[in-house]
Each structure stands twice: as structure tokens, then as C-alpha cells.
Image (tube, rainbow, N blue to C red; front, side, top):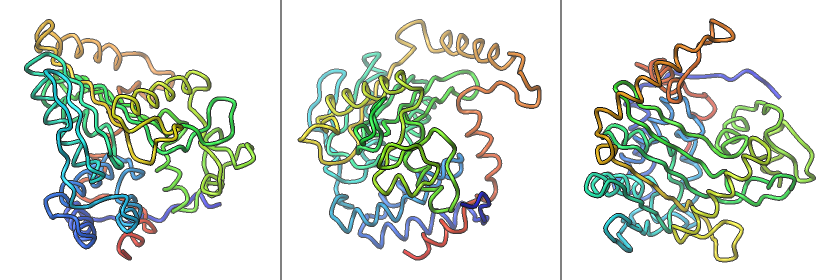
Length: 335
């Protein structure tokens, strides 16, 4: 397979408009379409093409199959002092997640902590986006969700777990620390991008349907599975997210008979002001970040980074125009 990818530059406004028009064509209300498109474009800007506009063919197909109800509004299913369950009503995961951020922020500032889960929820997009939104409000967050089976258990060959992403946001006096990763060797979307661009995968990422390691992204879509990251340790973390994401949201762990599809999402939000004060907390975090950045690098040309640095670098690179795979852009324009 090729390693060369043809790319195109497109303005943020043009890509946002294109995405919004496509979603509206599939009966999504304009206010939802623009919000979802904003999330997709932000992911593209941050260098996460796996969660960018490449998702539009998947989303429109899901609407056609009635898996996504495009005009559905999320509602509050149950609410106590510091816990809330949102019913996404099988509408847009991004819309339900942004509602969860709004509710969690308000309650965390009142009670010091809030836990929100989302049931009947479709794909929520890049999980780190929500940690970024909360960090902007000086709130700490830990967010996770389970997903459709795509990942083998440690030592297994069948799809059992979701890619089960995990994110955390920690505010500081500068840029927040934003940790965001799939608990698999790869997010499924990155394999999707590799297939769309006709490029090979790195070793240790997937196995084919017979359990043999492969670097051909097509083998995953032909019945293969993604490997867990970090061996048995990554598998344990993924299983924890599977159980708590599915169990606390009512969306069910994906290996259970009651599971259908979607992201069982949980957000834990903490207000540091209710502990030792926001200013003191941010000073502590900023001092620690400074020490991390000052760590001597093995290769001086590759300084030690803090989670979130790569995304910030990509955002700078993608201004004023966003670099996107030509084949992906062509597939979007064909919708």
C-alpha cells in the first residue's frame, strides 16, 4: 500500500459550511447541524482527522438506517443533587454531550463535583473537546464512553470491547492539560482514515479475522479486530470503561445481550475551588507543567511535551487553512 497521501487546503468557513449543508440535507435542524459541524472541524484543526469530516458518510448512512434520529432532542431522564442521567433519544451524540457539559459545569460549581451519564447516545465525536470546554471554565474533568465492539481482549481474537476512549482535562494558568486517547492500539477512525488514503498501518495495531497481526486496514473491516494498547494493562483499563460506561449510562456493556449500539458516556466534573481554591490549584498545576517541560530530552530536537501540546501545534499549522486528505474531501463533496 502507498505511504503518500495527497492533501488539499480548505478554509475553515468553507469546510464548516460544507458539513452544515450536508447534515441539513439529511434533515438535521440547522442549529444542530452547525454545532456538530463545529465539532468535526475542530477535530480536523486539532489534527484528529479520524474524528473530523470523514465521519459524515458514516453519520448520513446512520440516518438512512434510522440509527440516528437527526431532529431528536436530548432530555433529562433522572436528576439528583450531583448526578444526572441524560437520555440522548438516539439523536446526535455531540448535542447530548454539550448539554451534559453545561449541566455538569453548573452542578460542579454548586456541589464541588458532578457526575453525568448519557444513555441512548450515538457517536459523541472527539471526547477531548468536552474536557477542553470544561477546562475553559476552570473545571477538572474525567470523561469516558464505551462503544461498538471492535477490540480484542488481551489474548483473544474476536471483537469484544469498544475502542473506549478516555479523556481528562486539567486547567492551569496557561493551556490546560488535555489527555485524550482510545484504550485500544488505535481509534477506529484512524484505521478508517488509513483505508481512505490507501496507506498501511503501523505494526501492533490490528489482527485479521484469523488472529494474525496485519498492517492492512482492510483486514479490520473484513472481520478483524483492533488490539488493546499496552498489553494486559490497556485491556484492564478498556474493560473498566466498558463496564462503567455501559453500566452507569444504561447503555449496557457492549458484550451484553441488551446492548444495541452507541456510546455509553460518563462525565465526572470537579470544581477545584471547593478544595483548596482555583488559583492555588492552577498554580500547582502550572508549576508541575513547567517542570515537565524542563525535563532534558533524549533528542534535543524533540522536547518533552505535555498532553494537549500536539493538538495546539496542529491548530497553529491549520491556520488560516486546514490541510485535509484530497480523497476524504472528495468523498464528502460527493454526498
